[in-house]
Image (cartoon, rainbow, N blue to C red; front, side, top):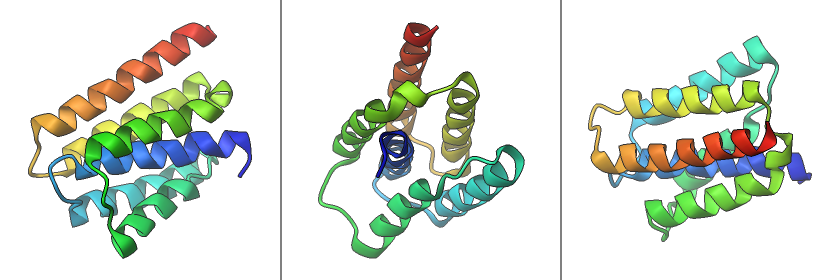
Length: 130
């Protein structure tokens, strides 16, 4: 994996952590991620296959980690490649995660907290790069 891919892999973990924050990953969340990846690739020509891989791995194997642990690890992975973060990518990541939260009919405060934690991190990284 090249360093830029760490950002996408980490983003996949962040998305998984948000989906898992209520204790389970719902079908609607998986479907939203699949559709988002296809649309982003088609519209923006950005390959988010690593996000799909993170979700598929979770669906096959499950996890012993908590949502908070996955979120922290995802942010750490993301940080490894975030020198390649652009304003366009930050916007795409934000919109995907907001849509992911909205896709879950069992919306929880834990999802909001995980989302806000990453969005604050993302805004700070953008500010530093500016």
